Length: 192
View 1: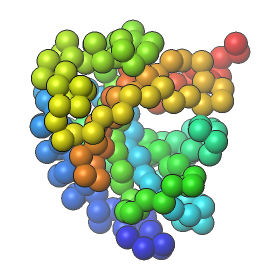
View 2: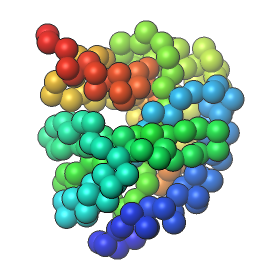
View 3: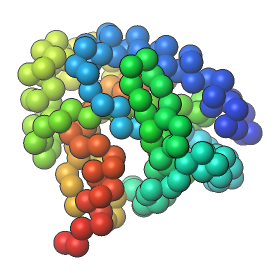
């Protein structure tokens, strides 16, 4: 996509993105877990495109979080009309403003699934996930072509540990974490 990514582009690319995500969910063995998908995320290469998409998305939604994460603003927009991904309802979109990295493809980049557990770090989250989907042990140990990244991103006001496992294949990514985005946002409102 070019530098004029629009809301119409996002709507037209959603079916292909969901097809690829569904195939990847099946391959990973996550489809049968019935996990909540708390949000889908976009990638853009310019602040002007991020501004335009934010304005367009807010015509059918509202910004529920505008937080600095890893040195750049990231908006969470709750949609009035949720997106559908097969049997998953997605009511939030993550719109990160660009950092120094340029993405080869702008548009839909990943979804995030909530694996309810008490994990406070990546090791505990990995253990909880592998207990439910044992064959992911080899994937997480980098014994397959699927790239895996373990991280613990946090916003400047975040109080809730939310370790993340990202599975990436080609230009499709699925992330798993223990707490939903709205729960994380609520934790930011609590005084330390």
